[in-house]
Image (cartoon, rainbow, N blue to C red; front, side, top):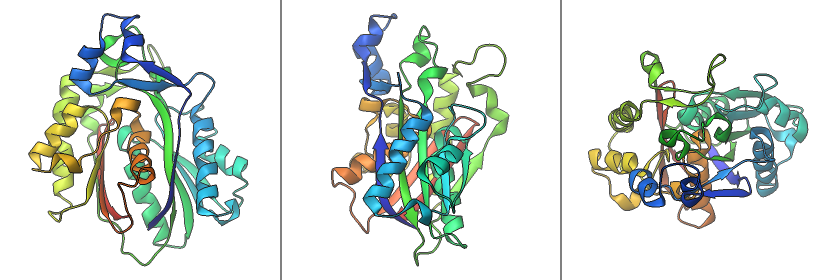
Length: 301
């Protein structure tokens, strides 16, 4: 699997920590010290679908591929506009990708890694080209009077266009922990649909299971470790457990907050755009979150 192009699409509205402090009992210092977040993007007119469509159109333009060449369209999201039709199906129609099948995949914050692993297996078979996009409008799942969760989440989308190549399947580790479902929930069909989270339990899960997942892929060093941008403290703790150099653990959550399935591809696109990621480098991607779930994957850019 080769990543041919990356792209991102973000809502226009920025909401800073100061903006939140005018609404609830919090402060910029309190949020930054506990999370590393300074601001996040919040959708007003944008939707999960419209953000994903912007990413898809950019990917086709950057890669000089036609929609007819696409064999699949995969969208990782936990905040779809509808239960059906899926964002992926709507993209397939809007793009005119008449030869592609399309589906949404929900593994929350591990969703992009899960979808990318699925794409790799498709490309190892008959598929030749496809889109993998993470798109979220988490703001619709936030109780803006709940300081414990309102400061964490943001909206956005990013993704990749991938093609088949001669490389072997990228090593991956995907694990699910359904017995921990009550630790993190959102979107309840009855009652309150907002995020319900045991923050301490999520933290302990992340710093235990993310390093374990990464370790199962072996000890060979990678150039970059793109960890789900949930919380700077979590990423730092993962790095310490694995004895990784901090400079190999890039951060961009200060600008976006936790964007769930969009988090890793947003970071990937930022680093490709500014030149930090170069062709031939080994990347380790690791996502963790709702489900609960964790997923890690190594690929060569």
